[in-house]
Amino acid sequence: MQSKGHGEEHRFEEAPEYRAARLRRALAEDPRTAELGLQVDVRGEHAYLSGTVSSQEYKDQLDKVLHEQEPHLRVHNDVRVVEVAEPPDSEVLR
Image (tube, rainbow, N blue to C red):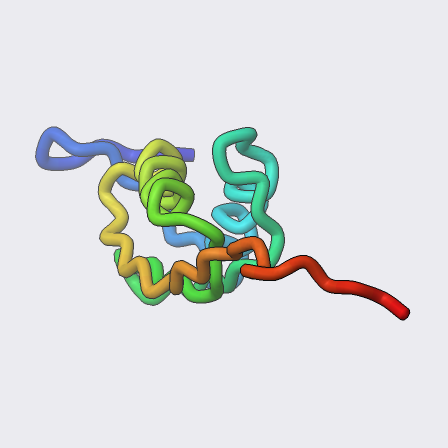
């Protein structure tokens, strides 16, 4: 259910843990992110993301997906980028 006031749409208060679960599910199901290993914590109108991803582009996509889900939510993206590189030398197994 939604109610309108002052020209904006407002959702009735949803418990923070349910909101966080819904946002985690959106990140897991969206093909741009498809990420299960991130933490989402919701406090008021703020969402805090943490975890690691493999590129800055991927990290930026997380913000886009969450803003599409809840445009009014302020996202604090504390996800770290850990680039995975090929080892410089090939490993020889003996």
